[in-house]
Image (tube, rainbow, N blue to C red):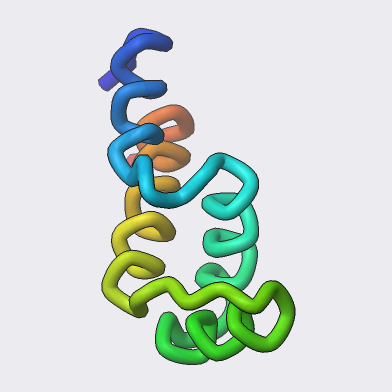
Length: 75
């Protein structure tokens, strides 16, 4: 499944409460540690509070977009 650039941008902007730079930080942490721990790291390093559920949604959205752009060949 291939998405147009506009469709991809619309999906990435689904979390308008998180700027693109914040999404990058969230995804960097979210790929490595539990989402609740990401929440603590964001407060510790950046002084901002983002709900664990938002961290999960942003991280999973980016993971889904990466997968759809580079599907795994299961054959």
